[in-house]
Image (cartoon, rainbow, N blue to C red; front, side):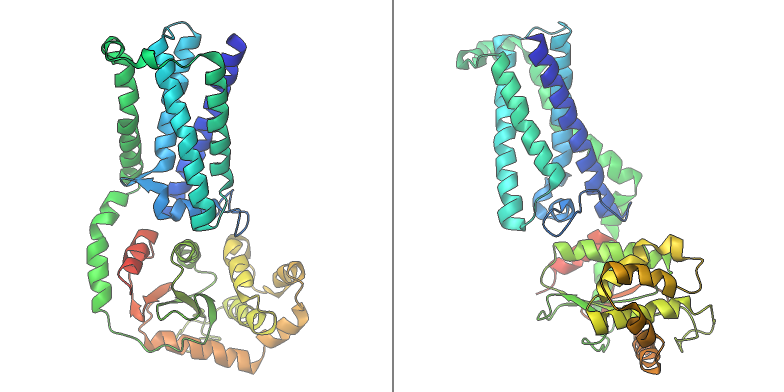
Length: 386
C-alpha cells in the first residue's frame, strides 16, 4: 500500500507541476511575457493554439489553473493520508476516486476538442491527460469503490473534507485574479471598450493589399496591416502578439510592410544610420520574392534581435538562416542591394507615411489604426468583424 501511495503522490506532484507550466504558458501568451514557448514545436505539436482558444478558459479562468489547484489539493490530502494525519475512510476514498475519474473523462473530452476542433496536439496538455489516467489507476488500485460510502450521513460527518475540496474553485479564482492584477491585466480589460471605440473612429487608409509579406486567409476581406522595423524592440513583441493572434483568428489576412527607421532607404526618416535596418528589410522582401521564405527570415530577425542589434552588416548572419532554409544567399543578397528593392522599401514606407505612421510598430485592422498591440485588444476587435 505504501509503495502505491508513494507512486500516487509522485504522479499527483507531476500533474501539479505540469499544470503550473501550462498556467505560466497561458498567461505568458496573453500578457506577452515571453516571446517563445517550450511546447510550440510545430503547427501540429502546438500548445500555443490550444492555450489561446476559447476552450482554454472556463468562467474567465484558465482550465490549467483549475487543474493546478485541483491536483495540488488532492496531493496535500493524500500526503496527509500518507502521514496518517487523515484517515482514508470509505467516504474520503470514494470522493477522491470519483473526482479523479471525472478528471480523466474531462481529459478525454479536452483531448478530442484539441485534435478534432483545433487541429493541434498540445504536448504538455497530453502529459496532463496521461497523468490523470495514471492517478486513476493508482487510487483505484489502492481502494475499492463503494457507493454506500457517499451517503448523506457520511456527508455530515466529513464536512471538513468537503470544505477543503470546495476551496478548489476559490483557489483557482484567487490565483487567476492575483496573476492578472499583478501584471495590470484587469486595468487593460477596462480600457478595451475605449480602445475599440477609438479604433472605429480612425480614418480608413488606402493600402496596397498585395504588397509586402502576406499570410493568413488570402481571400478574407478582413485585413491586419503592420508597419515595423526589425531592430525595434516593440516590433519584436508585436510580431509575437500578431503571430499568436493569427492562430485563433483564421479569417483574416495579415500583411507585413517594412518601415526601416533609417533615412538611407526610408525617405520619411531624417536620421541616417548604418543601413543595417535597410539591409534586413531588403533581405526579407527578396527572400519572399525569390524563395517564398520571407516570413521565415522575418521571424529569424525578430527572434535574434538582441544578437543582431550591434551588427551593422547583417548579410553574414543572413547566410546562416539562408543555409538552414536551403536558399541561395548570394542571389538574395544581390536582390536586396538592388535599386528595385530599395524602391520597393521606399514605396512601402511611403504607404506608412500616408497612413500617418508616427512610430513602429503601427497596426491597422481593416485599414483603421488600432492602438495597443496587446492580444486581448486584437481579439476583442476581431470579434466585431464580419
